[in-house]
Length: 462
Image (tube, rainbow, N blue to C red):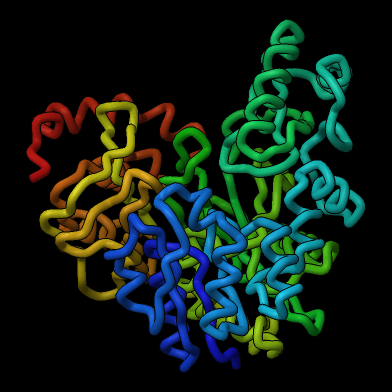
């Protein structure tokens, strides 16, 4: 097994990885910015190293400082978590040059899959269904228009690099293509340092379904089933569940086979996620995330497979402990991402001091968070405060358990998205399980109206 791992991240995911290291007798080193000196992950780790000023560019994105911290603490591996440098091929490459194991795929695979147009070509060659569109980046708006003529409208112009909803524009007609192209390209250049964009047919309000995969260095690859991540706001997931209640067994099996095929086509190693959109009886590959996902706990809850432990084992050069036919699914799991945001101010970040905190307990309830009573939610980083995860023998039992868990959750000092997620648990469309990515857009006004009517707008957060 590995000797000591540096966790190049912060917050709940850093705490999650540190705990897993301890459970497997692996040393842990936390890194932190000056703003995070009193953070939970700093307290939990065996050692902690300050890597710079609060700004991400001077700390959690500073490759040189992180590598120096790993060398000085004699780490033989780095776990990037998610976000920050987790999908940065240069970081993975530098780790390799320093003889520090990057817990994830190779830099070549990260680069290949990080280029969305190249990833699409790879999947198409492997026989995995892809959304109709350009074969690669389009050089200008005129070329984008030619693709649009072939695919029909609406189209989506997307950044070749990056993700997270950035560098994306919709064109509903030929007149909108040029402005959409320019907007997407400029935002892609600003966010990712790469203005290349590609074009694909926009499938309105599909379901967003992703498959978790694990692959070792011996050529063994398995999938751990799917997660429905369709409840999104501005392309950011708010809630995930597994399995997808509305997915037929036939399509589930086909998508699982294609997920494994996708991973093998690019020589993937470690944990990753193959993302699809589902449109009626059809599904299409959209991208592969070369890292641990925020929502990995729902898969762990229904399979009993510890994904972070498997990551550590694979990085240590050990083979997978399971074969595909040994993967079993039990019950249903739901995760709510609780963000520190003001839902009545267009979900603006709401950092602040946590004056009191209580998380839910009880049977089959799990919480992942970096918060504690008396801590501060920093304005410098992502607004996610906690993940509440529940499991039940059926979907309905899981929903009832999530209602109770959210009702038990108390986060004083900041406003959060929890009221919206609690209302979702009573929504008829959600209860039927046949919702799509248009769910939040279609229901948000009603959720806000109901919460305001109940006095939520004037509710004290202190």
